[in-house]
Image 1: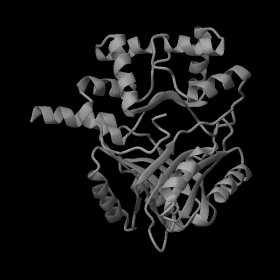
Image 2: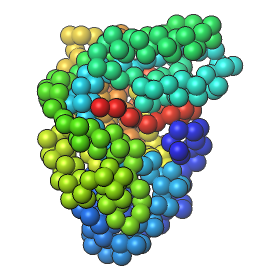
Image 3: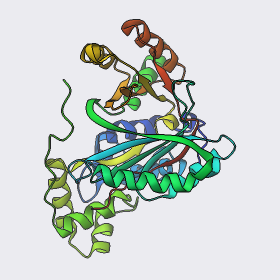
Length: 184
Length: 159
């Protein structure tokens, strides 16, 4: 639920303490696939299973954890067409329309981003995933119908190559920063 | 360095694999014995669920299983950036851009803006510095496209 509504971006850094950070570090590459994963994480960070579970539940309530889930490889599931659709939407309607677009099935990520005129007029981004480009194009037509006259033009940018994919490793850098801050 | 996109074949999944993948894309409940709770819902044994999940992860159907952290709420900086690189210099510039540890994902896309990458930095302020450094190093402008509003982030691929 927390990941489908508009979010304010105030960092909640201040409300995470050292023990939360230890959990973030221990779990950012994954949760152990064992009967009691909280106990397994707890062993790594020196906490009880119940403390780990409570802290992770709280981080999820705060939206620091979007959810604890299976992340599939698109291509292995047959979703070989991954299109970043970009739309030039009237600024006065974009917030309402963005929320409606986000509700369409097949849309995974949906953001408002700045234009770079004249080169780049698009201010609404929606990622679409399909088993073929035709499927992505059908989804894009639904979006176009929903946006109607409020949208002046759009494009579908397919990915043709992964150039790098290391994922985010923010927490570790944070932990290092914290440690160096402690020393000074 | 860069891998072709469709290097893995489409996985051969049975009905139970599909039910597990569909259910667990929605999230594990943060309760005591969470896998037992999900196994109950699916009317299977907990050990079967765990074994299936391990196998799906090992053969690359799942790229990961675990908490999905919200970068900005951990206090970091995050943005999407794009560049228009002439074809003849594309590979060379990819190497240069990928050298920056702040570049987390980088995709080639079919457009004049043909390189799209996500920058993740330890503070929001650091984004501008890294962009300036990439521009200085490559000699090409970087189009910064930070999100101004997030309407939805939820990848769910039904199988």
